[in-house]
Image 1 (cartoon, rainbow over the protein chains, first blue to last red):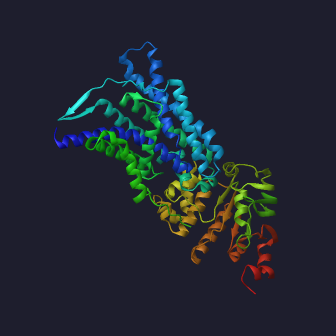
Image 2: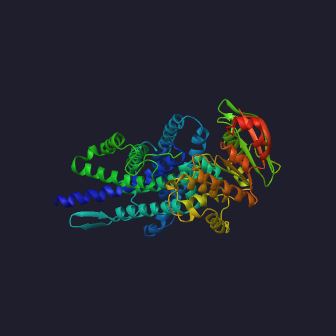
Image 3: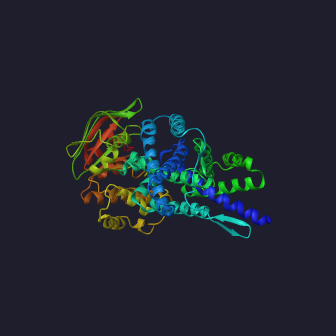
Length: 305
Length: 235
């Protein structure tokens, strides 16, 4: 393997996991932009998504379908999981955050940690504390270019993530609800004065963010083939770092931040040591907070009077 | 059309409005003047449902609206252009107008109304795709008014529309207020610029420390010696 091959291989691996980080980071950023709330239970929604995926797979195996049918069943699994995590996100917002809407900002942050523990422990009790094997769901094929290997799963993860991001972008940019979300992020009181129902839009923000995290959860399981009830903690923190890296509240920023973080992590794992992999994300978070606290794409908010 | 009676409200524990009474008859322009901190903005925010009413009643077309959520009040036809314009600065001019029509989903007449706004505020037409935050102060005031009109209000609440604008622009804004009123939209205007506000008004109220002080037709108030002394800068 030439040094270039090694480099390209790390890019490919980093890009794949970066896409998953980006999907989770989008949830942090959308919710923060609209509700000014860091939903620290978001990583757990992602983790629950992976378990819902496993549950869906197990249920489907009880049905009389051959492995050939899996290409058709895969979209169904995604649909099932994304619907359930979206619902879970909306429920969490309704009961854990909405009653605290007017409370000091520390209160919902602490509640978020409580929700995190609740979800982690619920999954631990239901599925057990041990690692669970997660199937790849599709038959893995390796494609080689010189010495760089790309699997069809990596292509699928990258492609599907991009599609989800494109759908999100279109929704935010062109639909009535999307415009209302941006208006709310811009000036909540003025949005109220235009007849926008704030609670409804915040619910939609949680719904979208949680659906994306659910999709990320399944892909995470398919990629690593093992899931655990505390996976959401680390993945959530990394995705949060990615959102801060891109500029919290900024949607393209979360996409760029996630991908960038994945690639940097891949580089670190490839060139330094894979045992230090997890350190890079937080090292980057510290650097960003020190030198560019508004993130790569975020702008300092200047309010005109 | 709008009847405010014995209204008390405020922020936190601080009472700002202490039993205010205002009547806005249909089709008229009513101006509200008073010094800084008199409670003018608080009154508009309480009517719009952003600040909760503590006591008293607000009736719009006979319907009690003092406990209605803000978005429902807009749906009744009471729309506010807030102080400092508060346009959505990171959205384009056109998106701001679209959001003005938020309470009218799938209404085929939105497009026509937008064209009407461009006719009324020609400056906005050339800047449809610009970010609203890049407009000048006067243009932002026009956008804020156009955005509110997109909701097809029956009653338009205007909070300090002349604030921070050049004299020529103030003139334009007041002409536009009259034009809007001629289209049949009732107006409740809050202003520091008492001359202008009373000059345009059918009826006016002077409030001080959250209470009614003086009221009368625009002309009566303009010639009232006490008002001349306190608000019009004449001795």
